[in-house]
Length: 630
Ligand code: ADP
Ligand code: MG
Image (cartoon, rainbow, N blue to C red; front, side, top):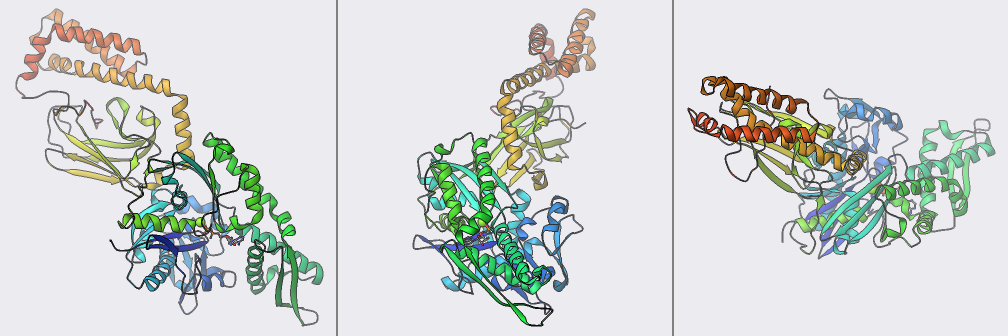
């Protein structure tokens, strides 16, 4: 049995650590005896760093030194989060690389979101170590499905800073689906309804044959349990003001206590019909200098009135996800509840009304993601072999090749991790550089797809076109991160990029591109054909062109005229024509002439150089030319 790999749900509001012991996933208690750890870190004046519950208690009291919801900023450029920095109480600034970082006075330095994540992860790691009585070095960490590569890499970095090798970055809905057992079902469709502290996410997943695929996602990144707490707080503040004329909004200590009490009351009302909110000595009456107490009864019915619109908003988003996946509510086999806020009875009731059946209640909603991560960890450690879990690429990945074509190396819906290589060659004589442009999308025209990155392979030894062999490899690791390398087989020279996440696609963009593809499928096919034919025409014209230039004396005046006309017309067709028939006609004409002058052409191309074959000289790889560099 391999060493233990723990599973961690590094949540926006709360984090959870789980591990599989004896085949069963268990949730590990933290140092305070809780199964859930607030994702909050606070720096005291004494430079002490508090993590979890003790940090959360300082959120309002010391707003500038207490970082919560740091996940909103991990792996993000400042420019991407400019609009939301006003929503947190601590200071978010731009560092010299343009990244979003935190300016924490008590820390005495800028703190990166990865470091905040690392403090939380370290606490959970230590909890796991003391529970298991052994050192833990590896973890599976979950992230939202829409996280781009930069956000995923930053999450990995947080693990590294905490002394953890992150063996897999797993999508949260996929983790939930795994805990649900979707991979073991036959072609089942589930909807993961994740209502957390600060965010709401819906994902529709399909499982079967050991593959779990995310079909659609939708969400609201500012809709969560915190909105509900705020409603209760507002109500308490208003009630108190009615009774005493005092506005508690100006009193930080009171606000912190109100917030904690509001959340507590909300949680209790998930199990009880009414609750007593009691905050003795909430403030001092400025007139009488006497302490004032806040005492309020809140019923579940009253709470439900306060928050019904919030829950209705989540269902609107569910509708959107269903529409995106082209599914009706009744086509969903199970609704899996994730996130602490799904414990609210009204949430469950509304889901039941909407889908016409009870939501699935298998695992604790606030623990299900961590449990899925632990299951994935046990699979990776070799402990559990019965399940195979694969994510797939949502869109095709490839490079731009001669004529602007998109040459796909990894088609969409390919299970990851995956590695694919193909050999390309040059299109000009003595070309010493190729530019590799990596695209993602379904159009056969590269530039109609999303450009993910570009790099050059230089120092290719000068050779006639078609001779150099450049091997391009696409490697998508298990975390969905794409590495592209290009290697000149002759010299072994290599260049590579890891696709830069700032250019990653959002879930929304993926959807749009797929829709676009479906709509223009026929048009795409036509364009693809056009590029193919033009390439064939170029293959024929090129040696003729060259021979005319280098040894015009090989031909009679008349022959030369005929061939020159062909070359000029063909070039024009290649450059400007969008008419398949026209290109086809020209190609046919070129073929005939090439046959007519076959002998001369053949001898000429054999003379001097030993090989001027335009195709990659190893069979089976296809005549794909890397785009020439001007
Ligand atoms: P996240 O995924 O954002 O880290 P969680 O899934 O841990 O968050 O959900 C946290 C939210 O769930 C908080 O707003 C918390 O108050 C709420 N919550 C937890 N337990 C309950 C409960 N019993 N009833 C209602 N809300 C709850
Ligand atoms: Mg969560």
